[in-house]
Amino acid sequence: MAVTKAKIRKLIKMGDLLCSSFTLEEAYGVIGREMINFFPSGAFYRFNAPKNLLEAAAGWGDAPKETVFPPDDCLAVRRNRPHLVAGTAKGLPCPHIDKGRDDRGSMCIPMRVYGEFIGLLHVLFPLPAGADSRASSRQLGASGQLAQLAARQISLTLKNLQFREELSSMYKKDPLTGLINRRFLEDALTRELKKAQREEKPVAVVFMDIDHLGHINQSFGLEAGERIIKDLGVFLGETFQGKDMAARWGADEFVLVLPGLSVEAARRRAENLRETLSDHAARDGHRHMRRVTLSIGVAASPVHGEDASDLLQSARAAVRKAKTEGRDRVCVAE
Image (cartoon, rainbow, N blue to C red):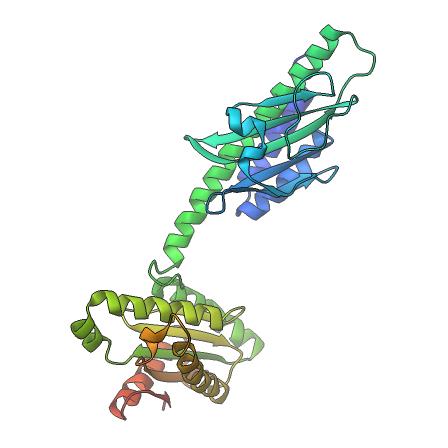
């Protein structure tokens, strides 16, 4: 019994939907909705390489017994080939699934693209009741063939989406700090300003410069300076989340975009940032930050400009004022 033309058409439809997905999460949703057209129950497990775990990213029908498990708990992964179980009569069930039942079979398919292990497809399907051994073999063969075709289509699409997200991350993020970079921040600020104009709300920009970083590099080496930049970037990323944006602008410069905040509210946030940074530097593992201070400039639309360029220039001018007044302080744009 071969895979029917109707199933092939549904596979093509699923492939089209997967290819039109913008993100991996969107693709996982497609898998959960469409795979039930082929198998009544199952799950796709993505491989989390840093943790060496398989994690359920999409499921349909009966919930899987295990949502997270090590790859070695799957016989298909151990053997690097599809593993078929036909009820209690054929095949050894994997430790991560329920014990075999006479009325259904299962198949686990390890998914590799260009030699890289990306996940596991696990499907469950009903076994024909009262059929002879030849009919049962044909049924198992068709189910196994369909599962492997689906796994191949899913794996190629997910890998392409993974590549796309990695490239997008490279475009958006500064490699040292993990914050968004200057190029992406300028685009994001322009979008925020247009939205703010429609809603008649302000957008604040906080520009900051690490004081005396050049002296630190000369005295203690470039590695010490990079460590400070990285630590500050992580601190800002953890402190400013949600609708707020933190970015690395240049070598020792950082920018915060704070939608909805007035100049005075942004100034208070900036002052609080200086105090919080001092507390952060006093903790174990961050003592290298104890002498780090910031010169900070604050500007907000529409008072200091209505486009990204004017607003950033106003905030940078306030930073220069903070430096001339002695550094380690917050100044508001004039």
